[in-house]
Length: 110
Ligand code: SF4
Ligand code: SF4
Image (cartoon, rainbow, N blue to C red; front, side, top):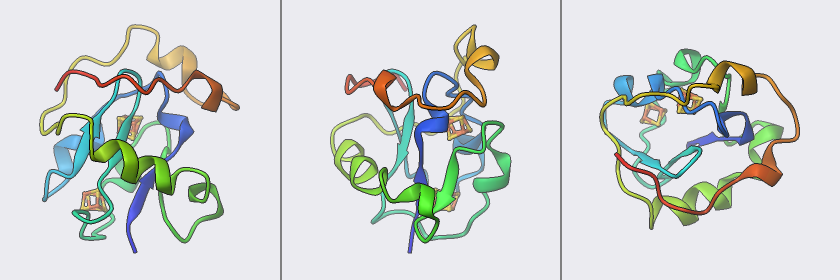
């Protein structure tokens, strides 16, 4: 099992999750983060830290559409180990539904 970042992260990108992960398995895109499924040790500490409730175990129904995307982009985006500045409008996007269409495949900056 692993944990998965879902669309709730898009344009929120608070990065609180990065601070608590003991194995530094988050990778950063332009407007969301992903978890490397082969590096995640399934400890679960990041899940309650996310203000957007974007992180779920892969057994959760919400993870189904995002598992492969986490694997794919964890292989190309840069690793991120320290919290940066969230977007100015992160709170505006928190809790909004249907954000998948806003996903950017571009890499972010760690
Ligand atoms: S804390 Fe949540 S919203 Fe912020 S980057 Fe991590 S998964 Fe995304
Ligand atoms: S479950 Fe643990 S190892 Fe996996 S991403 Fe979250 S904090 Fe990191």
